[in-house]
Image 1 (cartoon, rainbow, N blue to C red):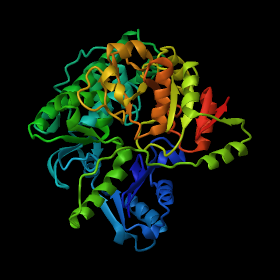
Image 2: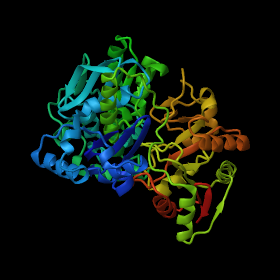
Image 3: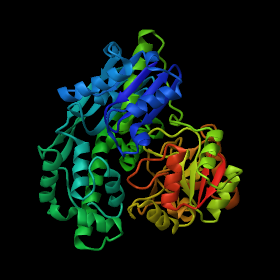
Image 4: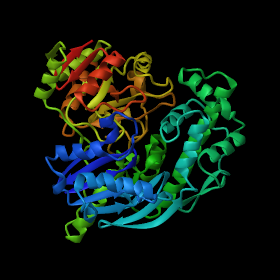
Length: 535
């Protein structure tokens, strides 16, 4: 039994027990978004899910190398409290980018691949590229934390008044509203398989230099961002901000494309993770270059997936030692806590709520056609940043006005798009640039077909792109049945799916979380393990 932990930004824990995987991030349990620190609750929860005790854990795989004495002592004290004085005999540290890259390679299903990690920084590096063959990973390139593509984009995020390392997705969304008007090749460029930062600085110093480069007023950035969050795009500074976002996104895509050309020469498929892999439009650029069947983006690509990467790397090495390693394909990410039907009914009864048992697919399809916002909770929680049908808010994508209602209910920025969950067999009909199997994890952007744009305007971004989840019956039978039933009633094999949380809060984990968010967002109905609750 191997326990993977990440003690830091986006803390979490993963337990591999034979062929079973249990995974959860600390934020889902302590309700602190992107929690930084020791994953005590996560460790306890994954062991609880596996019916295991600390004595059952044979190896503790820790993501990242601890350099500060105070942090290392704190980590050791926390581990000692759980595993006893001999905990060090179980510990193996896995370097940050190795954990990222391992999370992608060892879940790709490929025997031979390139494993790529790109983010802001970790253990002194910002990117790493490995040749992976027969379970062995050999690093062939890297960039230091100074030459960081992720930090460049984070500095743009900060410059535009958003929170760096949190709101990079907002910059990507905002970019679609404008055209790139700045040449950023003199700031950051690709050099072979590595990046070169010509600014020579990172973090807030880079933000200041970029403010000078663009002539953008740093003291007013948050004020301008708040205006854009509410839809105020017409002022000169707002227009400038959109041009900056569009230029940064275009440059990111250009660099990823150039890197993809270098990678393509190796003749191997690419397994990809790290914070930059959250950028679904840059991922689409890479996909167009490599082909749908030659790119795998690990679903928990950000630091929230590091515990998984550390655990799966150690698991693979143990298998290799025994001569038993074989490629493994991750089929789904429903790896988190689940709550039984009886447990949920007892919870609802204890809360004094009126509820009724319903035929879930038919009930939700009817509710959506009536224009209702549905909180949907069932089964094991998703691992990673995307809600994929087990902790989701669902709506009718045919109604473009539903976006405004959702934005108000969830306190979202008006320029952020919503995503669809579509029937697997409808992907070729709805996605214009699909050339292979569709994406199941919302890690990839696509161009919407004319038909899909006309029929599902609420899930199409202003630039005609969409970030779909293709749903197969065998992967999530209940969610598939809901979409199938909606398709029977409306002729559209897709629903709007957004994560079950208020903006700035973690996705709900427990029935208690679901009820609180349902009430706070004033959704119309909550469907939880087969029971419907109304406001």
